[in-house]
Image (tube, rainbow, N blue to C red):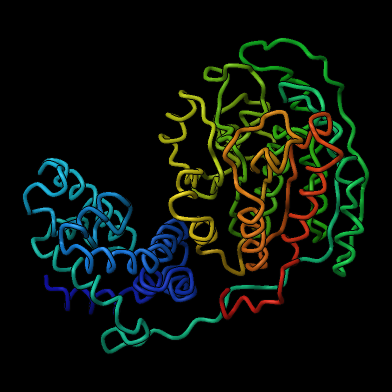
Length: 475
């Protein structure tokens, strides 16, 4: 099958798919019209499309500088979907840059496998990726991106309006003063530290209506050793149930809840409530997990038994029955809805489980190499007017040089400017609909410095920026 016939078939049977692939998240409305009910495949296509445009420029520079060999090296090094475009029909040359033919073959196999999954997602025959002319498809698609994406074949794709929308400006603060799931005392003072840092008047200064519901109550921290790999399981369950009901109640009132933690085990309650709300309201869910840790431990893997290292695993169905059932559905989350950002500390067994589950992780190496902007573009790809965006912000996400007020600091986190960019790009979507602020520990802080910084970043989440910007015109 020639490339022309492939393109003609794609445009006639599924115009949205190519729109997403070539245009990133801006092509999503076309794809939704063409592929109703295919959210998982669209998320994958949209994420790949956003990355494709940026990578294309880098690939062209590599080719200009060093020819096909440099382009091959570039494809092998980056090792994502663009491996297909820049490696698949260049893997026939001999050794390049000291790599063996077998290495190229494995990357070619990976690339064709990725394309096969992509084609299957848009309804093409499963064996199409093995067609002898698939290399020509990759080459032609690579060349095609250099043309105007609105002039594909005889069927132009319509222009797409910005997906940015007005954020909910009716906010509720809910305090959860406990360190029941943590390995050190002090996070129970986090809600008051945020209030002392003037969170409510700061947000009100932006014309936002803020109601502070005060603090939830729950069992005290007994400070006991783990039982069957869990510390304080019964108490954590009680706190998470209280958080779940409080957050769900605010969402039912069409308000934007901000949970003031407290340790990060409480996110089991808040995010299960958000997932429940999305099921009831028929909305898509995207969770951004801003953290130094993957929080994907289980009782068999954890070295400590502290449940604040397990919330993502529990939300994905890997945990004790009492916790994973809180939201009324197991698992509470499809792992594909989660994007983890800033990760730099993962236990060995936890790392294996993260890979097996298929979490999308933008760790600090990725951010160092590609930049916070690209990480956030990919993490936010395919968000639209029907997406509920939840941000779970663990303060240890930040570099401890600027945020010492946590008991789980890990060096090498995002700088102040990287964190601000992260928050501003979230704000630009207008999709933020719920927020956790977790693990702030005033006992570790210096004159409430970290609480002040957290409030500054939260302010950026709700629209503070250096200049007024029109998101529809880009940054």
